Length: 187
Image (cartoon, rainbow, N blue to C red):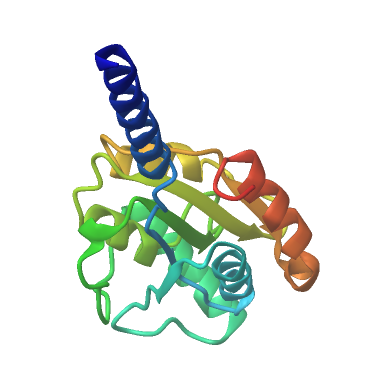
């Protein structure tokens, strides 16, 4: 009789322990999509990621807006990227520490992230965070943005990025979902 009671108690403890392990292993990750978008293309991809993951979303905005004239923004971006300029931002998300995974989106300017994104990334200690970059482009794909992000996010885990051609962002949701599955964020 004692043996039966002990076996029943041990079985119950093992089931409870396994149930706790399963709950802990499947605890949802808190996610944020942080993006800068000049033309709206990166915003479109950011919204597709938010829709697929249920992540919170935050738009990275420089304190001083970029020009709307194409050539003027190209010239300013080139100058800022080449000099390593990091513009002031309008605001920052509250309590970035609560997020496990941060999707970071930017247009690809001169083969890297836009300066406001560099400001955002360099404003925080992202050690222990998982960073998933995505870029909109018109031919340069990710450029050298992943290497640049890695330098700004020492101690973070950098997942493979997603390049999306700016002219095809409206139809990119299936490509976004495929990437999210490949990096293990959704099933």
